[in-house]
Every structure is written in structure tokens, then in C-alpha cells.
Length: 101
Image: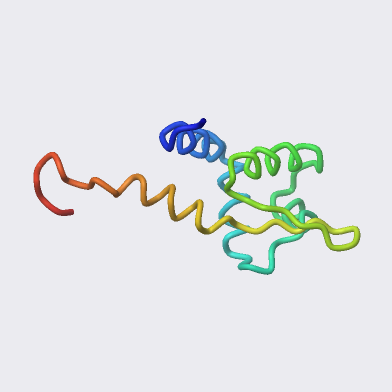
């Protein structure tokens, strides 16, 4: 069983590359309908194989999900996972100083 700390470490690791962080930001901006892989490739100007590698890492970390529609693959953000990840950073904010941030 993977702990919360291990899961979040994996997610932060997935975000630790400039291309993956750019992908996530662009997909989040695309909203719930998702962003087609071809649009991501054009926006980032990277080879399809490189994009595929980065997308797989983000999906594996639970930060993105994919869905196929005909010949297109759309990627959308896992907003609950992103909220949990950022919440993890703040959940005990300033507790050792017994104050509130």
C-alpha cells in the first residue's frame, strides 16, 4: 500500500520537469472538456514520442486522465488529485509555531 507521502512524492516528481509542468498548466487551462494531444504537441513544439512519454508520466502519477474519441486522445486534469497535492503542502501550515498562516 502506497502512503500519502509516497503518492505526493511521486506526483511532485512528475512535475519536476519543465515540459511536464507546461503540459499540466496547459491542460488545466483547457478545462473539463480536455485538450487533444495534437494541440499539446503543436503548443509545445516537441516530437510526438517525447510528448507521449511526458503524458504517460503525468497519467501514471494520477495528475491527468485520458480519453479516446475516435482517432483523438484528450487529456484532462485530475482536479481532485491536484487539490489534494496542494492541500498537502498547507494542511499543517504554521502549526509548529502554533499560529495560523
